[in-house]
Amino acid sequence: MTPLYFGTGQRRLFGVLDPAQARSSQALAAVICYPWGPEYIFAHRALRHLSRQLAARGFNVLRFDYYGSGDSAGEESEVRLSGWREDIAAAIEELKDICDAKAVALIGLRLGASLAAEIAASCRKDVAALVLWDPAISGPEHLEVLEIEWTEMAQRHSTYLGHERERRRGARYGLPISERLAMDVAAIDLLSIADKLPSRTLCLSTEPLPSHAAWRAALEAHPDGPIALEDVQDIHPWVEADLETVGKLPLAAIGRITTWLAP
Amino acid sequence: MNPVRENVYTVGPGKSLVAAVTEPARGAGKNAAPVIVILNTGIIHRVGHQRKFVILARELAAQGYMVVRFDFGGIGDSERRADNLPALEGCLDDIRVILDWLEVSRGQRRAILVGLCSGADHAIIYAGSDPRVVGAGLLDPMIPPTRRFYLHYILHRLARPRSWLSFITGNGRLFTTVRKRLLKPKSGEEHAGNPEDERVRLFLRDVYARAIENNVQLLSVLTGASDTRQSSYREQILDAFPELDLSPLLRAEFFEDSDHLFLFEHDRKRLNAIIIDWVETANFREAQEGVVATAALTKLVRAIAVFAGQMAVFGGQVFGGQLI
Image (cartoon, rainbow over all chains, first blue to last red):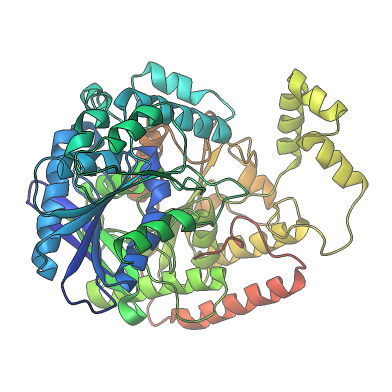
């Protein structure tokens, strides 16, 4: 495990590299894209585990914090999704540089999966495989789900309705999220790019959503042949654990991703 | 805000602990100010819920302080410990490793520990064992209930129709508390991490007594709108330990409307302002010459082991949790 900074002086990004623990005939590389907002902090542990599992199977893995999130530079209030797409591109270049790889696998969870899908669909030749783990398919739907998750969390922790007061002040999820960023998220529409996804795409779902019927149909109509939307029974690592799930990892989803990428 | 710089290091045996250092831009630091070390909240990594510890670190660094946020072994990005130390002892040893590293690599001989929830508990438990610790910022630490707390609690509950329904149907904490009082379990049956347990109170009393002995400045921030419902007024920490004279070393604050995790931005802004003011104004003692931490730490770890041995069940916010 090697923590590092990369990116530019103005846009310094924090990442953790898990170097390959097994030898491979060619350099294997994977970039992991975190979820956003309150989901980020809870998903960290599961994505660390995924990263180490992939490293054990011969991948060099880089997971990183977008600008204005986690340990990276910047404030939440400055964030735009266009910048985060550039951050993913910078992470791909950084990892290719570090391990002398020609291409990477791009793995994303929730909003991170949506951004990864957009990057992979943008005609990049160096995304050899794409893993979408419970992606945000429709922006408005994702914002609605986040609002529900946040309200449940706030009500669980607070005996007062502080979240109502916060909402009146224009904040979201306890974070200083700008209206521009919320509009960026609302504009996400994976259905419109489904036909441009790489043919080597794995899409996992642990949570049924209203958008899934259209998403499944769009994946099946992929020009290079149908892409399956695989349903996996597992916990949701992006929400706060309860007494039943505390300390648990989503081993079924992680196992499926690792065996799919490194059979 | 004054410019700050951030770097990340791997520290300790096997370089297994990941530590992020936030400090003033070159030449802007306060001379000889203590370093501030922020501890994990449960199994949440060093960034903290709502990125609270990153923002706090940057605000403190902008005021001239060096701040270290690190992950305990097995948490966040840090590697699991190679030994089989129990979780609590492992965390205490990790704090020592970080303070050793700061002393050797940065010449920092004074430290202020800051933590929320289990992080606060780790901070106060460690604070009395190491002469380098001159301050402990305790954000919603484990705190025993007092008579005044129970009075607040019961009055609050009596005013809520839902509480009556819970009581009549045999559910809810009020009923459980009454039942527990009437049917006191035999020794060892209660949860050791439960602050209502007198043995836990005595353990914590001894921990605070050691911190007093070590002349550690204390900041206690309690919340009143927390799901944990363990505090209801500012002076509860004083009333919980009437045998101790905490007042000369203590600054106590109470956030009546805040939840335990300070999830809302306005609460975090107020919290950061209080922490910065405390760090700027508290009378932190000078470094102690020629005192070695390890002997005190060994003594403390032995005391914890004895305490653990007395407990049939060793759980709760500070003691439990699989740190994997």
